[in-house]
Image 1 (cartoon, rainbow, N blue to C red):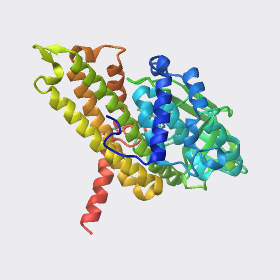
Image 2 (cartoon, rainbow, N blue to C red):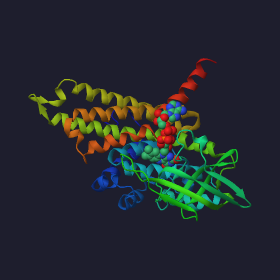
Image 3 (cartoon, protein in one colour):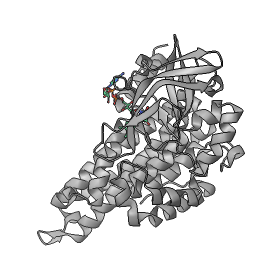
Length: 380
Ligand SMILES: Cc1cc2nc3c(=O)[nH]c(=O)nc-3n(C[C@H](O)[C@H](O)[C@H](O)COP(=O)(O)OP(=O)(O)OC[C@H]3O[C@@H](n4cnc5c(N)ncnc54)[C@H](O)[C@@H]3O)c2cc1C
């Protein structure tokens, strides 16, 4: 069901097969990892050994591609997310959390950290969100100031993936009237973490506090005032990969529903032949294939030029995550009470689909920016 209707170029099909085989090799402990709010050590060890994380760093630092390739990231996430949300997040954040270093880090920071990221010896994190600030990032209150050769950081970041387990944070902060991105090793004096929240689909997530944290000024990623430019470059490369992960979740949910509907009989026939069940299954398949076509097209475009194709990536992210929201809901309905059983695969997929419509650009925020661009295009 997953790739029969869309032909990927050969080298991506090879990568897809590699990612699928790897995802299937960790199923013995994927349930345990998916319930954990800390990084699962065995899953980390096996993912490191697989070499797949090398997709997330440039070739100069042991990576598989000269620069991080959005289509490769998307194809891998689709395969991992169908088996384990924990695995997908562990893979994805190594790229999302380190991309700023790859494009704007000092030679020292790059040399010290990027190879370790690709080998999963260092865990990456990107810290933008604050307790009172989510979509409206310009309202952040974390501040950084220069003092001689040092930067001093103060603030509180919230809902940060990998908080507590990360080896470094790339932190968005206000520098007077500018916004800068600062690289902060997790063991720097003044950095602390807490875990005040856990979400419906357990996630390695926490708050990170910075109290008079001193780092060398060479830890500023890019130059002063380039914070948003670098965050945008990160989104442009990785946003489309959320669509890939959503397709993995949606496809796995549809597979569960189809198996159930083919095996269970009511009124003397399989559920798959009853009432609106065929329509629920077939329309889910169509929705997923439409979303997959847009996702692979957007990811291929982003691989060529991420920033020039951000609108397409945003469309794919909204399209695929919203489709998957509908598909998991229909799958639960088709499975009746068995779709509601705690600890079942469909329950995990149902829970995991939900956050995807909120993080890395909530659907409504993306609608707003796309609509603005549309009006500008049409009414010149
Ligand atoms: C699992 C998970 C992992 C995360 N990991 C990280 C991480 O690693 N690093 C990090 O920095 N953050 C992370 N976040 C935070 C995430 O980026 C924010 O949740 C996201 O930016 C949305 O912010 P918010 O939740 O505060 O929602 P809000 O900004 O409060 O928005 C709430 C709702 O209001 C609506 N809305 C808001 N603004 C607009 C607008 N302009 N137009 C129309 N509607 C609007 C939307 O419906 C939106 O869903 C994570 C979140 C989750 C759930």
